[in-house]
Length: 282
Ligand code: C2E
Ligand code: MG
Ligand code: MG
Ligand code: MG
Image 1: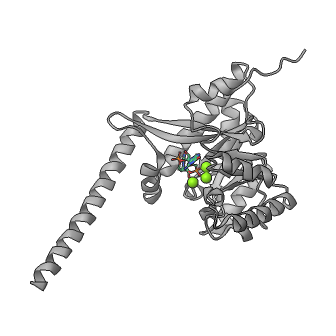
Image 2: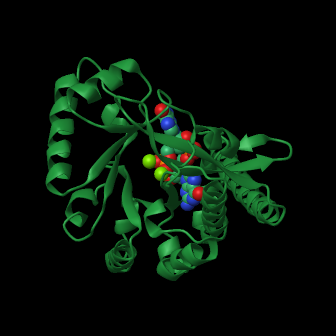
Image 3: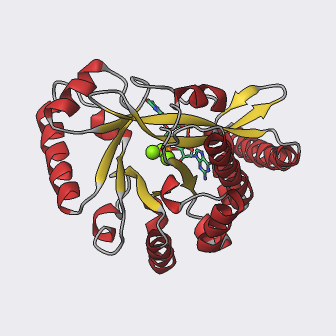
């Protein structure tokens, strides 16, 4: 009967909702335990000069070394932590790990490159970012220009003032600021008139072109390049995977990229191997 179908639907809907809530609650608990048990770490993905392949920076990407499931990526747990407003606990751990690693590398006599960390928009409300990052500089004896904060566009949607003011302070204190996934959300352009941003990380979608949209892709990439130059910003193109994409970027005089074509995210040990010894001064 129609009623029966209707009932079934309601039941099914309830079950799905319940399962989702249960699994989210379960995962939240598991993540809390994992933080305590130090099961999180980060991988580091190089950012490269397009023509030479030289590593000009690294990005820390959090990973969960799950005892049963292996290496789990952030898409599984970051959205949950953002929803229950506890993502800052994980981010604080990652930032500390990155800074302590930079300290180690310098101690070992390696020539370090700037390392970027991802900052969730929730962190702007939960944390005093300026004092935390200044504290990390003191704790690990680092200079601010070694640390870059990647902030996604969506951070500017709510409470524009908190975010722009904080970025302003961080920028004045010498930290590099980049807009992550630039062009993927909608608040991107107008906020550039209000904040000092040194790097635009161009969203992966801009470089995913085909024969049909190639000319339009090129027109957009040319315009972004021009704008960034006038604003004194560096562009890093995200998600570069193929020779064809590299060729297009070279043709359009783009200089920096990040993506599987150059390197996948690496373990800290693998990333260490890429660093050269610092030049010895006499
Ligand atoms: P994101 O910051 O935009 O990082 C780039 C993502 O693209 C990474 O995924 C990276 O592994 C992936 N990627 C790199 N090169 C390529 C490529 O050539 N092709 C494709 N298809 N993908 C590529 P991942 O590591 O899964 O991170 C996903 C997102 O999770 C990050 O996006 C970032 O927003 C967030 N995230 C990562 N680590 C942290 C963290 O420590 N804290 C916070 N709050 N968010 C983080
Ligand atoms: Mg990022
Ligand atoms: Mg990105
Ligand atoms: Mg992303």
